[in-house]
Amino acid sequence: MDSMALERSAARSRPARDTAPRHRDTGLKQERAVRTRAQVLDAAAEAFATQGFPAVTVQDVAALAGVTKGAVYFHYANKEALAQACAEEFYHRIGVIGQEVEEADLSPLRAVTELLERTARAFRDETMVQAGARLQIERSLIGAEMPMPYLGYTESLTVWLRQAQEAGQLPAGTSPEATARVLVSAFFGAQHISWVLNDRADIADRVREILTAVVPMATQNAG
Image (cartoon, rainbow, N blue to C red; front, side, top):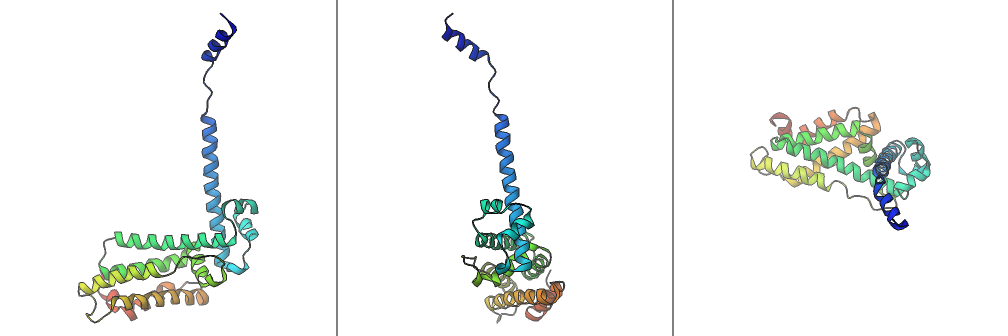
């Protein structure tokens, strides 16, 4: 047997190289990257919620996340990108609340009440929501395009209020569109005042007051 044949025979007899460890390493690196990205975003939300956009530095975010500045920059180009990501996550979470209310199969006025009350709890309890709200107030100070606020929320309320009117739960002369705008203005104004005066501890009470004043039937007969 010539040398070439011997080499081919030896190659066939050798076990195939195990590539699984390499795939596992890649998967672990991807998982770590996802965790780090989320960790950085949560830290940015905490910083923005408590300090405000102008006062926060990338180093602040890195310190809160327990990572290096390089790790922050690996995932986000700058502080503005962090603000954009927090604002987008804020609206995503508000959208999830609306989706959950829609899937709960409630009467229209009950859906209005539930949306405002669940959103109020999110403002009180969730740092990301608090960060998003503050960033929207400071949007003129952020040198990046931010999501347009309030439109989707107003549209959801308008749809339910229109359905309530069709079901005879609102007076025929009531404008669902105007009522939705008033509710949104009152709600987001109330959450801001509640934040400034009481760290949002009383936001649930303020929402009940808004509902009673604007759509009293929502608190009396919704179900």
